[in-house]
Image (cartoon, rainbow, N blue to C red; front, top):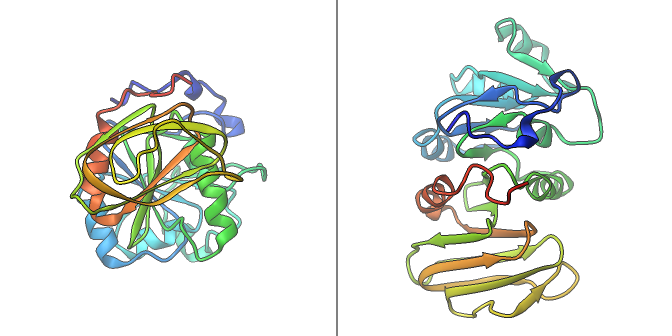
Length: 242
């Protein structure tokens, strides 16, 4: 899988537009937000190496994990954490048009990217990170906190979830959707952030979801982590053909 990245990866590392880390296994991507110990345990059971976004290096080091790379503008990396990192691990990207999460997202190629510490505590940061998922549809990435996980819907998604599981979708732009296995089907609906949305649905059986464009976020409970990882790993390297 490490060699199955999209043409989007053929960038210029000197400008922070190319791949810095390639892995055939899931990557745990760590941000500077709070991360509960139970969340660490659940995610590191699936992920191999750790990549940190700027200040996220401190969270990884505090957990006893040495990042394979630290990527970002380095405006919040503490001096003590910098001193603890071996040479060659820090990869500064100076541009200020994107968040550290987005800098990492475009710089990491892996079957699945598991993002921790990107949901808060600032709402503007969380919204920017959700926007980055849509801006980079060629990355199979999910963001987690202790309660929920969110990811960009591929063209077709199949999930086997327990009936009654909460299943929400939120459009980040105009998109049409179809579904099976939901209490309130999405068939024939045109969704938009300033129009109809699709939150607080419920699973009734195996879920099949089709999205017409890479604009639809899926939000499910954290307990669905194993099923979501399996579904994302089964997708093509670049499901939207970006």
